[in-house]
Image (tube, rainbow, N blue to C red):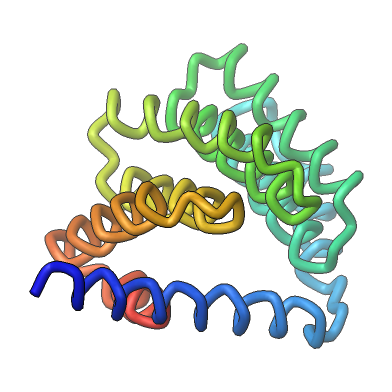
Length: 176
């Protein structure tokens, strides 16, 4: 019975990764969000709001496959968050940097950053961040061919998302 569940989860993970990669290739490049965030950054003080905007900007650049810019803003967010001792901002920055590494297929660096984000999210009891980190870690293990660890992390992510009622995350995890 347990083997059957793993086969189903394995199949779902494979479908999700294929769909995710296909979507990324076909995504229209839209710079409007990045431009809006750039405008906000010019007005921001060096506070937690700026860290959040830097992290969002890193994510936007990653979506449009502008990885150098994604790394740049992710690292700026990390540096400022560390200066402010803003733990959530640090964890978010590690996650964004990990996303960029994963997109560039630098999987060991992605895993390193995702694990750093998981530790901080755990320390600050951010269940959403913990669930997101487990999902990202599972995705990297899957790409590395370590299906056992991938399934373990993805199942943990799904369980946490169910506990916190994260419907979007549950839907994403169910597309695995």
